[in-house]
Length: 100
Image (cartoon, rainbow, N blue to C red; front, top):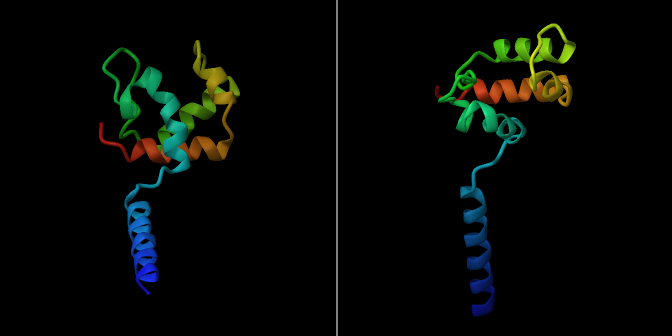
């Protein structure tokens, strides 16, 4: 009986720890690659523009233009071509929700 009670307590505690761990969304995971140039959480302190707080539509439009070749750049056209449209939308949604 004591074993069952102890096992139940341990399982409940493990579930509470797991529930307290925030989920990383696909957009958040993919957006992490942007931070190398655009700053932590998409907030730039350099000449490269910040992405945090921009509208998702604006980010999608820009990335789509890089991907199609309509917009030129040094690195961004190659990076944009590495993402699907759904991944770009996911990144854009995540970054638009970040505080500038």
